[in-house]
Image (cartoon, rainbow, N blue to C red; front, top):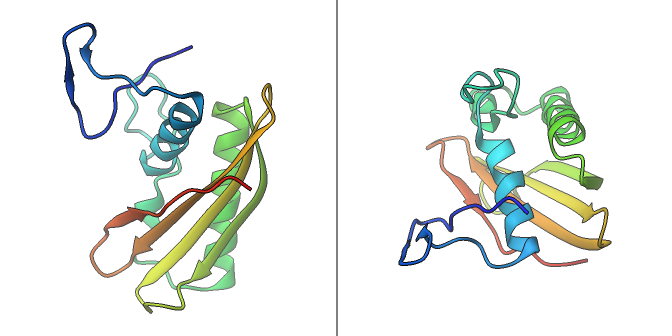
Length: 136
């Protein structure tokens, strides 16, 4: 298993930084990293990453939402082969007109564990807020 540090970083006397403790947390870390990374940002692979913030100034149309869904699906299929996306939902938030809500329903293939990652992207500030994830 590839370990990843907890975010925010916390020191640990054994490994230098405290690592994530569960497979579910590790998978969520890698999925979040894939979504937030801009293509070209990862030195070893210039195609890695959805670059969700690239869509900040796009018009909120069904075509834009479809492009976001397609980018997420393509990246997960290529780089996170241990996951199966069962549904990707991209919608306008009903709470704030400046938010786009993205929900990823996925399953970890080898252990059949399912989870949901909920992301709100603020089009005004560029902030990305990750909501509570819940198994489904």
